[in-house]
Amino acid sequence: MGSHQEHPTDRLLATSRAARFARVREAHQSELAEDYVEMIDDLIAEHGEARSADLAECFGVSPGTVARTVQRLVRDGLATSEPYRSIFLTAKGKAMATQARARHGLVQDFLVSIGVDRDSAELDAEGIEHHVGPEALAAFRRHLGR
Image (tube, rainbow, N blue to C red; front, side):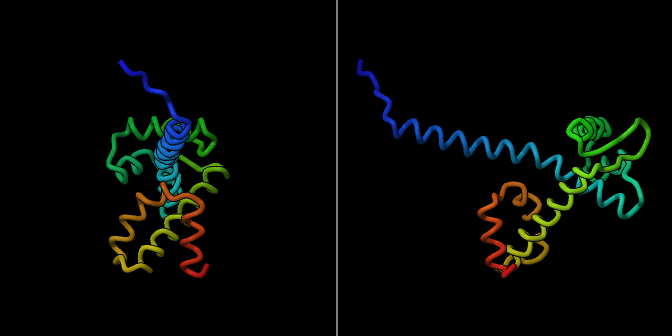
């Protein structure tokens, strides 16, 4: 039986691959929080409050799912909530919502600028916005002249 010697390049490739997957996992974890704080901010702007029932309806999820997610937002200092009361964003949550909305708009505008129709760009930006890194966002800004 032959033994396989690990080449330093193999270790570098594995480390690089692991870093890429870690970035994707991190983006998935922040994606939910960003979507929720953005929606809470929208509901407060439209109705003066954000209720769990409204969030469940908007996202098409169960009230239990909303409750668990809101608990995480509270734990992470992004929102405040009391049982059977409205949900409000902390300054940190409001900043996250503002940043997520701006990133979404930038991605959407970039997609439109390269020929994607506005409706498709809106849908696609919703997923892409959470996975675009700072370098790509800077390139989008340059492309758009911002």
